[in-house]
Amino acid sequence: MPDSKHDLLLRHFGAWAQAKGRPVDAELLGRLLDLRLTYADLAATYWPVGSVEHLLLELWPAKGDVTPPSEQGVTDTLDAYFRFLRSTGRMGARSAEPAALRKEARRSAKHMSAAAADTSAWSPTKSLMEYGRGLGVEVDDAPDVETLQARLEQVQESWNALPVHERRRRMPGPGDSQLSGADQAMLAHRVDDPITALLLTFAGELPSGELPPPGETAPIVRTSPFTHQMQALCRWMGERAEVTKTGVLRPAAAHEAYEALGLEAWTRQQLARSYRHYVSPAVADVGADAWVDRLASRPWRYAGDCEALDRLWRGAIASGLIELDGTWAYPRLEPERDDEAWVRIGMRAGVQLLEDLCTNPYAAFGLVYGLLRSYVRGCAVVPWQEILGFLADWDRSVDERAYEQSIGYDSAPLSRSRVDRSCGALADTGVFTESEAGLALTPFGDVFVTAWLSTASADLLVNPRPGGSAGGHPWVAVI
Image: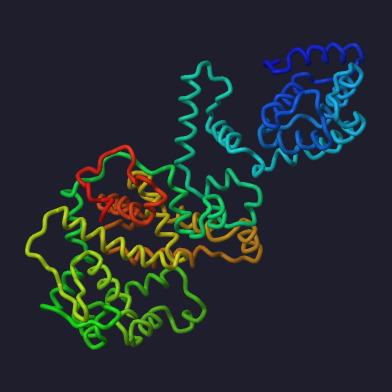
């Protein structure tokens, strides 16, 4: 029998049971008594009303072995133990009557297997240890502290490599089946913004080490289509351009800029993303191409209503390429800029685009997850299927997904189009690459996400790149 904190009591009980001819499992009783002492701080001789049910249906499922003991073994052992305590005068004062305790034990033991099988009742440590056993890593038989620590680190590293939604599936909490991943994260982190909750979900995984130097990242910014278009907008403005009270180009000038910069191509590309994987019945009636033609030629009046132009305008202002002064806007095209200046321009403009996208969290979730997941995995490719799996969990509860499945509804095509469109908001900035395999940050993207975290969550994540220098980017945190 493994050592127990109650060895002396167990030996007396074993001798008593043998003399009475009662079949008992003293090792099981030792584990039960240790659970009560460790997690409920209850003495082995004190058994108030409800304490047996709490032990068998709450403490054991949360902290005990994955496989519960037999119902008969629990019933026989506890029945004999309560008789032993009463007959030897050991039963603590204010304990329930032994008959009532034995009845409680029989009633609770019938439900013990079901309770133990409910993974939402498991403690995080128990869930993690069981996950380790599935990997073939046992911690119970570690010969020394060093080996134990090495095995625990192996399990933790593998666990952290799992996608967020897979961890949630393997370690659900009580009531999780009725909550979406976003709702659960907001409750866990005590915030009311789902984007903030998503950032905090990754807080424990943020990477350390040096960032790519400006010499490596600046060429990505300089050659990106978005930077070229911002510069083209500045050149189109000449010395200055008149703006409205809201700080955007006047309608006539906005339409002229839209035509001169060829922004209809980006508009069509972005619209095509919206219908690449999902076509609603209304769109199917006229055909996706005809629908895109209709939307691309739809008139707009204000510059802020034109997404293709507005993103360039806002990005250029945020990056300092355009400066507003009253009712005039002035381009700031310098003949030469060093690498740090170019990266700063790319970061400021990109962060503005991402912040604009995040004003509609539903539209941004998939892209933000992909950026963060690639960031913590060293700019690794994040498969599209993983992003879709995250969205399914983040948007809807287990119960809601089960209902959708029961009626034959597949949300994946709509979710994929939603991800495609959100990616389109930053696809031309050089932050990430898209491929058949998935989404992956570029070296500039590594710097970009670090900068975004330093601004989007400065009050939540003290240091978005802990444990390492800025790799030549001392200005990242103050973009």
